[in-house]
Image (tube, rainbow, N blue to C red; front, side, top):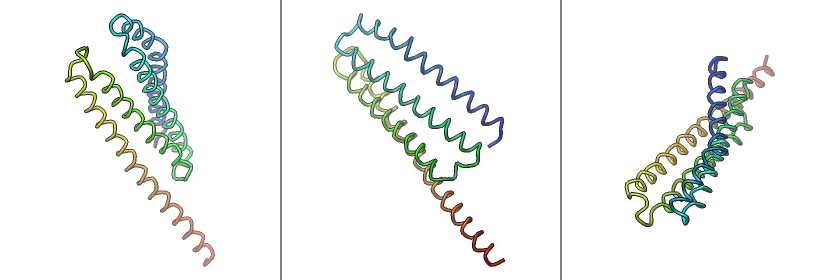
Length: 162
């Protein structure tokens, strides 16, 4: 990965991180005020789900930052990278569960249209699809690490022969 690509990706991660902190510090309190005026029964679950969803995004951002650092150093094809990939998969699955919980919270009653709940359930499927994509990428990483280990072993054997 080129230096410019790493720099651009880090800039995007910083912007998303700042945006997520903005959501937690400014938008969630404003949402709390709006929800208190409209519907008291759903306010707390919606706020908790929102905050936890933002935390899941922040976890993914930190892990991607660490993986980009490993790419820059040339150490991404190691067993240490799996820890971050596993955390990313877990955070994405947690985000899908949170979206489904939001759909469940919003489903009863007339306050939210059924189409919105259906859209949230569709988003759950899309987020789970993202987790599956990362899982496939994890499998590719495992193959690359295995090939790297095999290549190192073969180089060592070749050096012994020479």
